[in-house]
Length: 353
Image (cartoon, rainbow, N blue to C red; front, side):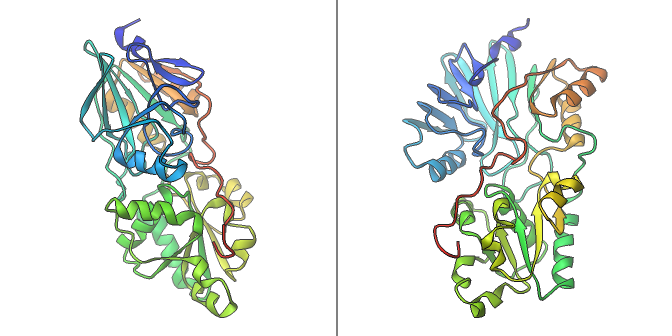
């Protein structure tokens, strides 16, 4: 076993660095944690110390309260930090605002933990930065050949075309509150859509956080302000309303009137999932690497070892081993492939949240 292969190992809490005495994205409270991004399946409260980008720390503070850790340590992209003789750097992962890969090095050996990532451009976060390494630890949420995400502009074009086709109907877009919602909004703005976009109450705080960190999302308005009377609700005709997936078919959404139910997710490639959620307009927009991105990244980096954490591990491992790479599945538990790292939305705190 090489030095790199001993730098990190699996434990019930997740990936652990014995030499540095820290975990990466642990699934239970630990003394020291390096957190790759703010989705709740990777970023949990209760760790003694947390090392992450300033944006990820801000997201964790917004979700869990400022006391989510006793010792937060913000690290800028590219800056090296030494933890008990082990060097840690964070480099962009392209997943959501502040998302990072953890580069762990000691005695010339280098392991890169991708966290969740994607390779395509995202106007709301820094793009993935490939780092040569001995061991690359990758996700595989969409690690099957069927998952090939179409260009973002095509999916946003479908939404804009539907708005023109059905100008009298509200377009209710389900999107995860962290990352996906802001990305869809930013892509709409880039496509020239300048009208107000209305937000479910569960979306507001994180959209405000993105704006505070320099991401321009245009004119956003609380949907609650327009849901109190039928006359006020007429503003939703021909408009876009963003809501968490859990709100697409509940009592709240019924107050919007005649809606075109949309859902932005990589899982919309599977038609049965769209039908199950009663989605009229599926939008295949994902914040995870698809099959081609996963395999292209593995080929580009050509690490001595490819370790796969969660998702469709076996398919990616089989592909890697048949293409000259040495790969293995880690079978880590506690990471959410179904909801892209997002918990169910909390119930609205007001009648029109």
